[in-house]
Image 1 (spheres, one colour):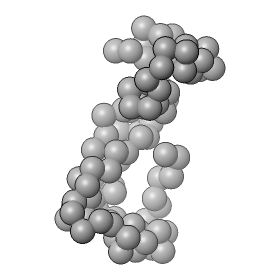
Image 2: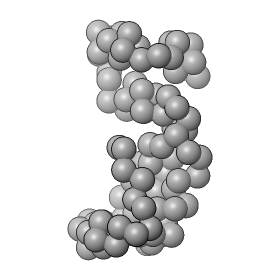
Image 3: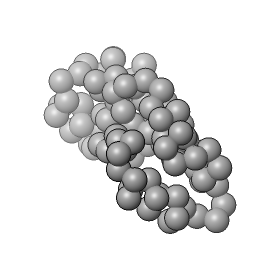
Image 4: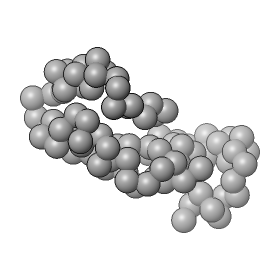
Length: 92
């Protein structure tokens, strides 16, 4: 999270290509801009990872964390308290 993979960063693109697992795995893009997965596909290639992006917007990071990482209610409440977004907006 938090790296946009600029087209000029050839070293990181090459690193992601050469260090990819033998079997294609899911690579979730968390970015406020929509359709960043196509940028990653273009920069790294479609055959290496299965790129996806289901969280978009200014609240993409807390939405991702709540959906995939924070499973305990106390953790979820803490994340909601620490964000600027309302719970109803994040749980859509």
